[in-house]
Image 1 (cartoon, rainbow, N blue to C red):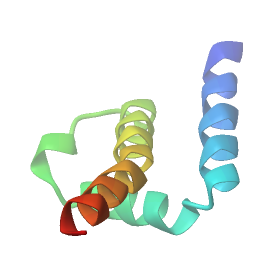
Image 2: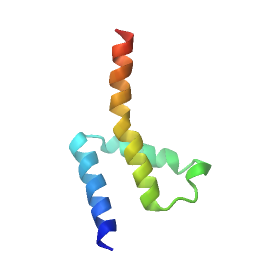
Image 3: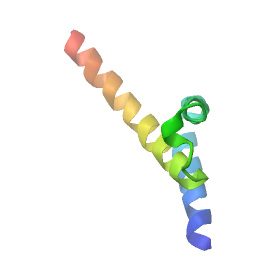
Length: 68
């Protein structure tokens, strides 16, 4: 069971260290209304939201470079 606790800790720490708590929470809220995430368990939802939010700043940086 310890590896599950490690997962929650790691995701929470990573999100907080990057200052993306609001974005992460918003992504989880958005997913709660989407049918494709309906049957995923909490760990799968958190993992998806984490990956989505972590990739967000990279996309913004690349978009800014493309505009300049």
